[in-house]
Length: 167
Image (tube, rainbow, N blue to C red; front, side):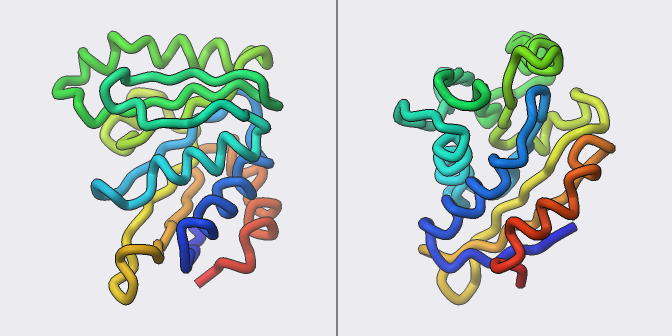
């Protein structure tokens, strides 16, 4: 686990980019945190670093936004409004992950994903965003934790790429 301290939304965007540069087809990135903690802002930085130029918006009402045109496609998912696991299953996220895992797909990034992460096995990167008590409007604490072998194999590289923000 790495804990990062971001002093601003711009730094959070940059941290997301550093993580995205290590992403591979088939990766699942789970974002957790309270409303307004910066999950969508993180997703924007992640997409930008992949080379996606389309505007990235919260998929709260559409549930899934898929973006292409970058180094990897990005499937940006928000499960906040879903009440039951059966509704999550209806999104066909498992199929998105399978497609991504073929090397032809991309990354699946799930906001509020801590609620459903167990559905997708034991291989994902969890990022918990928390408002900083000293500056809750701008500063964030990001707790980054690999679950399973996929990100664990990139852990040293990840630590180097975000080292300047380590708390």
